[in-house]
Image (spheres, rainbow, N blue to C red):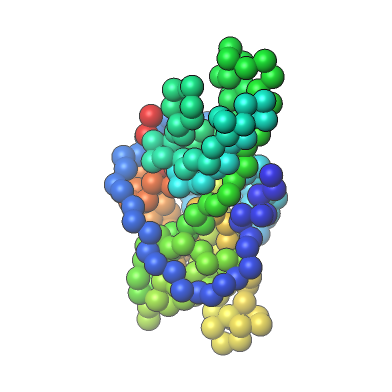
Length: 259
């Protein structure tokens, strides 16, 4: 199933409520090879203590996360077909099986897991998995009026996300707004966007369409503040459990699904 079906519905409006979040501890996992990181070719902040993967607009395969509503179809045993929601622990519950962990896995991965799980009970399971609904959450922080996690109402950009968060504060550095995104292989990518032009003329906005789980950070006066924010947010505070691991610099930082 294509990612675009769920990531880019038509824009319905900018009204959105702050999503409820739970505190989660950050895990430091194994070291990542430093040679997989490179400087972003787009306008980007370059922090001496944090390295990011090269920015890419390519859309990775869709991965399941808590809150996703999933339709599981078993053609050889229709009575086992079911629509389920990925729980906060990253698992789904299906008939005849113990809870199955699906978080941070692609639809194809989950289909293979369920085929193997049902193989001892069905001759040819041929399980298919599709996503019926998925929350599209982004985090907006820094010099905005109401920082927090927001549900995207549709296909929005960074400036629209800032508006959802109450707009810029007086001291906001509108010309270097930081956008952090999980890239291929779980690596964190980062670029900056000049949103000042969009304030004076929406047609000149440095348009960066947002994706699920993007982080938009508005620094105050110095772009280096974003480096401190990243470390505090993902390593020390991590108030938003988005439900995946990704790499920033030489170590893996985590917003992991509870096991």
